[in-house]
Image (cartoon, rainbow, N blue to C red; front, side, top):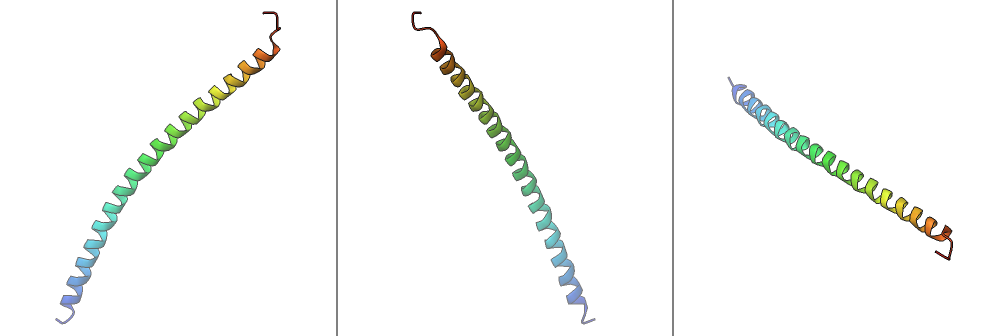
Length: 70
């Protein structure tokens, strides 16, 4: 029975590996969710900034085209 300690250590090592993999996958899932929320928020803010800058450009063009006697 000299192989029994080897089998026990192998089983314990596999169990530890499985536990670590499950924990790592949970952390990665949370990180992916957070990353998605940050990307969505950044895209929303970028869109608002683009809309504001476009509105400002339109206002500047309209102001330049306005007759001076008004």
